[in-house]
Amino acid sequence: MNKLYNKLKKYTLEDAIKIEESDRQYLALKLMWEWYMTHPWIPSLNSNGRRQQLNYLWLIIANAIICYQLSWKWEDYWEEFWDFFLPLIWGGDAWKAEGVIYGLSDFIKQSKNNKRFIDTKIKRLEKLKPFLEKFIWREEEYYDDMEKLRDELAKTMKQKKDAKTIVFAVKMFSYWARNYFDRLVYFPESISIPIDSRLNNLFESYKWNYTDINKFYFDLSNKLKIPELHLDAIVWVNYDELIK
Image 1 (tube, rainbow, N blue to C red):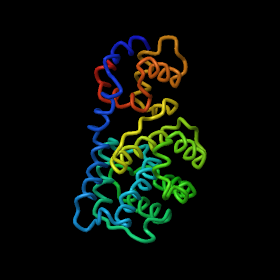
Image 2: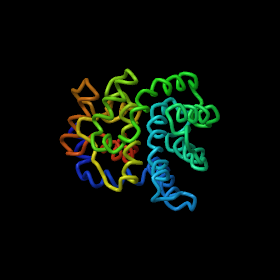
Image 3: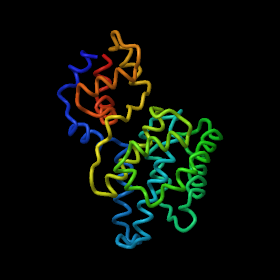
Image 4: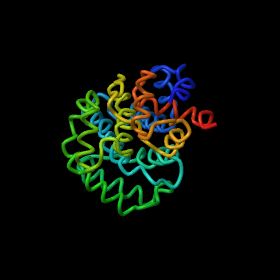
């Protein structure tokens, strides 16, 4: 872990934020946001228009929950998500939990990048419904307390708090929330990094006497003074060099 730390110690939390905001997943959501803010039919100061902008947080969380076993890169999938939902003008019942589940179910049935386990993923969306129903009008509360968001998602989905889709949902939620609320809330130190094949490979290369991958990244995060979920961006952009 010390060897990996030495390769990453030049990075700061501010560097992590810059890297996140150049991430194709972040940019896909930012494009959605900018389109909403400039499109002539959106009444920006009208409560209904603002409600629609805010309601995209429902879609983003629900999409993150089914963002696994993709057929291609995550970045391509989120750009596909943007292309599908951006032209749609949703109103009324479409923004209830049932509407979000229906819309995403329809999307993944025709998705090029999320073709596997469709029935299982639709069942996961149905399972998320109780959370979505209490989420409306509390979005900023969850942005200010992302631990609470993680805990309630994990409880609803009956998963561990460090499950990859749970922490990934928190990450993607924050990407849209930064734009909507026009302020940055840092990820809490208690939220784990989403363990994927890259992080497993790095762990195997640098673990030395560690046996617990979560403890390895927790210690690395503490030593770098960068919360794990922000550290994920730094590892992502440096992965090819680090794995050498």
